[in-house]
Length: 77
Image (tube, rainbow, N blue to C red; front, side, top):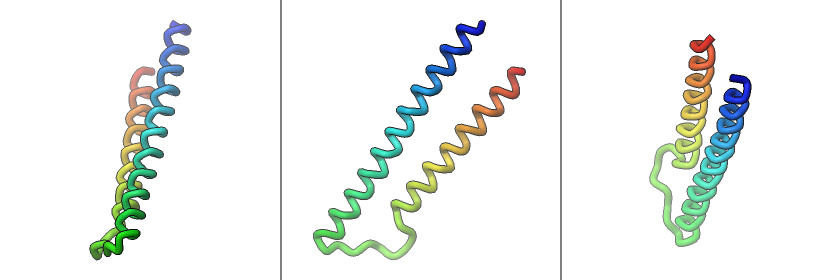
């Protein structure tokens, strides 16, 4: 049982690292797209900044995921 728990924790750490890497890559892609639009003289549409909105959505997803993990952990006890 202890060995299974350690393996599960290791897999969770790997998944978290992959998720964080994906988040960073998405942030970079959005920033590059905004820079490219600005470089060609494109004007952003009025309204909320898409990068800010994407980061907010990402952060909400992370919070939901963490809460789900906490609830699942508490429910197992």
